[in-house]
Image (cartoon, rainbow, N blue to C red):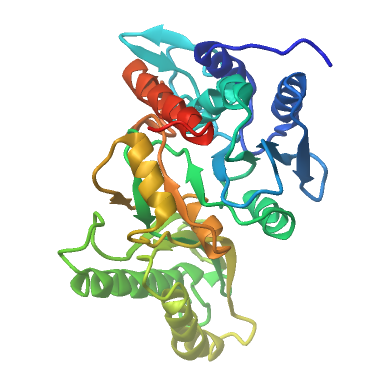
Length: 392
């Protein structure tokens, strides 16, 4: 066996940040590095590939993988693009300034992965009495797509873990609930005509505006029916129109208009209510009026991403353990979406706890505070004690 590779947490962060794993690129170079690193410590790992063979999840177990009640440390390896952003330093090189480490993924969420990997020798040192599973995914940033086959593999091949800790940036607070996300692309197809003959053409923009107005009425309904005492901010299901484009020129009735939109339902809300009502309005109200003028008019909506919310499991032993590791007395709820809901959907208790602030995610000059990394190190040390059978 090769000599064990040793990285400090800072060195491991720098190494992971150096891989450009923007979602439209491959993550295999990073995965190969992690495989080699784990193998140097005698830890085998397995890939769960995408269909094209260009990206991979990686799963590994420190300890006995036949033992139930393990702890999963989970994180996504992909990051959002840096194109068009004004960075003051190389996004894929770590720079320290004012007590912060700057670089793409420092907050979201390679620092958590890096610390988990840097502590592998400590987890293995006394032979863990509780297995620690490492679960690294791809394509989280484009709809939590990559982790799904890995979760299926975990459910098929492993005894049920006690808890999954998704290390998204939560300022090292424990999060046990978040909203879901449903995103769609809608394209309206009408009939081009000279703008002076509006009665003969079908304006795709006009009818797209009707559809968007309907979504805004639904958004207002969701707001009015929200629960002000809810833990979420805002305390209701939200709807957002992200982009819209259409038309050719001022004097042409537009043939096509498309818009991208999403909604983020509360964990206990029906995930399909809004899309079902939207489709019914489009098919039963808008489309018949379009087709009175042009039989070939169309309204087509395709799903971009769907990811469930995370519901609180009050009193769950796994959650209680993570709160002890993080030294938190209560758990929080957030409005962003993560892979945690998918693990919970597979009947695995899951919480979020990781270094960094979600407010820094996706921004130019993304950073994580050194104080947050210090807190995460303390968390990992307590986890080492726990899996080694020592009190925490």
